[in-house]
Length: 279
Image (cartoon, rainbow, N blue to C red):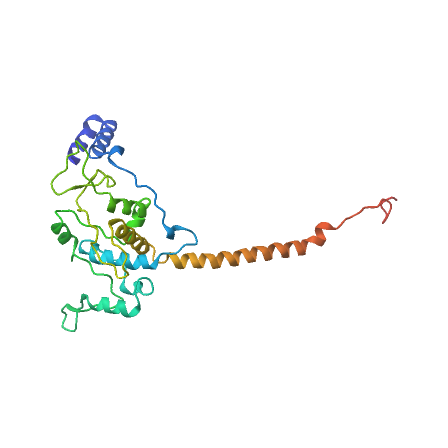
């Protein structure tokens, strides 16, 4: 391709070469018809308000859904076990969960890698050792990491919820390739991930009925937390800072009025003939 473009530039000049470059650059662009994508509806989420917090019971259930369903294919490589303390589990529960995982560490004094029980400072385990293994296990499609998935999509919490609950039969005339599943909320409508959720797919510890929509709601809230673990602290700090700023603004306004009121309210009179002005 590069040799052909150089030949066109030499023989036909710069304009022809530029046209060839433009044609080559747009030849591989595939435009997606808007009719092939259904935009997700907006759902009411209690944690998205300026002064709202996460439902921590839902976060615990969402972590359970991730651990029992999603973790078989997807990773959360930006989240460490210790970040779950006080959010979904207690310190003792997190230590127990981490110790159940074997972590590859090293090298040791002999220069060899070794396995050890997990520690709270370790990241959540990945289902595959590398991307090539993930692609080989999923027909060439690598399952993406979910740490920032909610932030990576427009209205990510609505999109993920609609995607998890939107599997259905393809419409008449829509041909699906083998190994693909129809989901109108996924670009193109064909997704390689089979429906991951099913009624009663997990058994919640608190007795909540594990319907598909309930599991999707819980895991979406958990994934929203993984994308912004500092969200609640940021909101609390914002309330503190804004309160201090408001108090300082009122104090500065009162001090300004007190300082300048004698000067702004004084009256200066000029009398003709005093001080030699009339001589």
